[in-house]
Length: 309
Image (cartoon, rainbow, N blue to C red):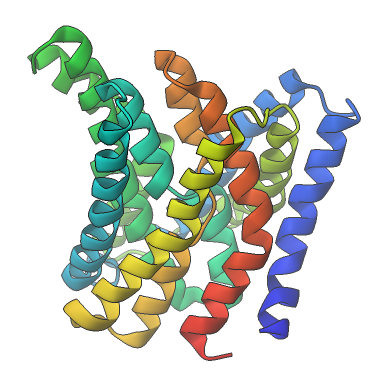
């Protein structure tokens, strides 16, 4: 347990450094926004492209992984949704809260952390988890919010979802990388060195950007944010573990990766969606702040539990 904590601590230390820079105004909100854009559109995309270009679809695709992760995630999504309706929430707010309960920071935190912690074998499973989050649940929140406002499902809603996926650089980089891998050709040396150097900025840049962005987050409606953080950090990994270890034939290593991914704190892109649609951005902001702080302890506990360390 202590060894896992010490291995994850540097990642959270960089987040803490970014948080200090944001709070001290050494890094303004505008600077943080541009750093996040650099990581999202360039550094992280280069890392994901390099990873996927050196893997085949057979090495990435795992139907049992998808089934287990979807089952566990959908179960917690359903719990959060039912509680939301019992609290009298409308469809839009309920969709945002359910998203907070299950969508972790896989892209900015999970990918770089798990590759360094578990080795290159973690690349395939963690990218598949990221793809499920982006394609299934990020599409679902747009469908629910837009559909509830329009009062019906329309081609416009589906077009919005489709364009969101096509324009997402993480999805595009993974698809392009797999397309290259399908040719059976190695990346040209100069191209491989380019994406390696650029992708090398993803880990420190993403972690620093997470911390700096947290500096502008508020902790309003703490009791709701605390409940949603409990769903994300405790219920989500527990139900994904039940699915991976008991319900579906997922191998031990893959189970460790997807359960650890489920234990990640709330993703920043949920706040972006909440702010874009004007639905409960403050409670999302608070949940990101609280879950990230608590995950310094809970994430190592989950990883140690799954690895037997």
